[in-house]
Image (spheres, rainbow, N blue to C red):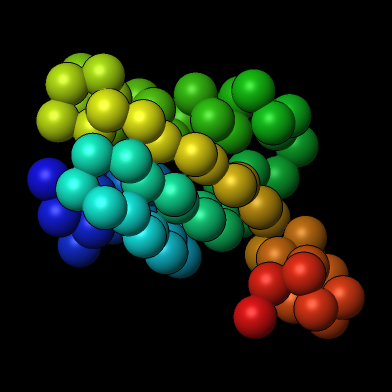
Length: 84
């Protein structure tokens, strides 16, 4: 599976999201920034991302690391230099 395909699938499942995906073809990292994450804890946010991907995780996607942020949290990450 290609990174742009994963990005597209997550974006379709969470339309408000800004999605960045990197990976090697089986192991992927996704940063998902969405206003839909407001008032959601980290587990709920990850569940939303996994739901958008359906049964691909564990099949075409062997491993997926997710970082899920609200827009305000994302801005904070960038301002602290954690994310470039």
